[in-house]
Every structure is written in structure tokens, then in C-alpha cells.
Amino acid sequence: MDEKQIEFLEQLQHEMLTQDTVSQADPRFWVVQGTIKEYGYESEYADGYVIVLDCETTIESMEEAYEWLKEKDRDTVYGFEDGLISYYSKKYEENTSLDDLEEVCEYIEAEKIGIVDICYPYISHYKNVEKIYSDTFFLTNDECKDHIERNYYHYSEDAHSYAMTAWRSPQVEMLYKILQTVDWKGTRRGGMQVWMKKSLKKWLNWFRK
Image 1 (cartoon, rainbow, N blue to C red):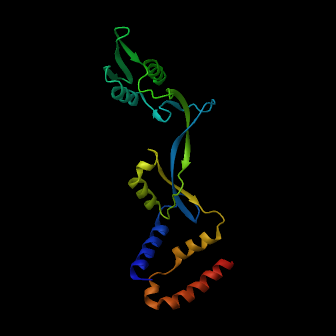
Image 2 (cartoon, rainbow, N blue to C red):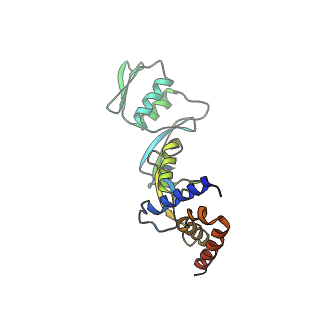
Image 3 (tube, rainbow, N blue to C red):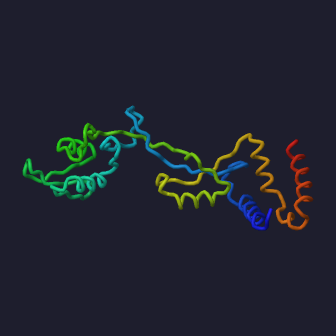
């Protein structure tokens, strides 16, 4: 084990021992948690709804709908104010407004704006569900937060660090015990072989308890 590795273990040990436990038992680790939309048609899916376009793209707000209409229908002048979309109807020769996403959906279908093949727009309801993102595991809260900051585009807007415990996992308990209790500085003073013999005996005695 070289000097750089020992310094890393010393710093990691310090972080693990001094960070806020957030009332979570050891061996604790952090994952990324956020909120996702789960779509369905039952009454429980009542947190909101979106317009589904071209069988895949979704419009989640009136502002998004306004931007989409401006891009797809350049022959019509659209306006957006106070959450409402206004436009001039050539058919009725008057200014008309769209008040919500359901009206927008009906308008898109009626005017056949951006419709491709058989993919007609439709309304899909959803409920907000908390999700623990897969492939996330961090020994310290700070590293988890830093990861979210650097990779925010992979997660929901409310993504945050979330503490968990490796419950009844003897191997993880042993690993954490080693990381948190070993005198890493001592590996410099006494030599690695001597240190390993003493530490191994100590860990085995602890593990047999």
C-alpha cells in the first residue's frame, strides 16, 4: 500500500466518522432518491396529466405547449400570458384561447398539427412516486451530493442524497469496522506485515463475537 492510498483511507475514515449520521444506523451508505411520474388510468393517478405526442414525446405544462405549437405551426401566431395560450383562428376569424392541456390536446388533434402516421395526441394521467435510482452507492453523504450536482441531468429535479443501512450484512459490517477503526497512520510506522498480523487477529476476534 503506497502513501497515496494510505492518505485516501485516512481521509475516508475521517469523513465516515465525522459526517452527520442523519439518525441512520451503521453500516450506512447513501443513494440517490428522487420523484418520477408513474402513468396509469386508475383513480389513484391524480397528481397531474400530460399530453403524449408522436407516441413518445410529452408536454407537461402550458408553457411547453406554447413553445411546441410555435415550432410546429408557424402559420399561426400564438401568444402566452397568465398560463393561457392565445391564437388567431382563421376558421372563426377571431382570437381564441386554450385554457388547459386537455384543450390543447383537442386542438392539436383537430388541426392535425405535427401528427405523424397513426400517433395521435392523447392525455395520460400520472402520480408522483419516490424512486431510489439504481447503480448508486456512496460511502459518504458529501460524495453523493457531489455526484448529483455533476450528473443532475440523469435525475429528477428534486433528486437528493438518501441514507440507508446494510441491514444484517456481516461482510459489510466487517468492512466498515476496518475502514473506521484501523490506525492507517500506523501502517507507515510499523510496516505493513506487522500491522496486518495484529489487525487481522483483532478483526477476527471482533467478528467471532
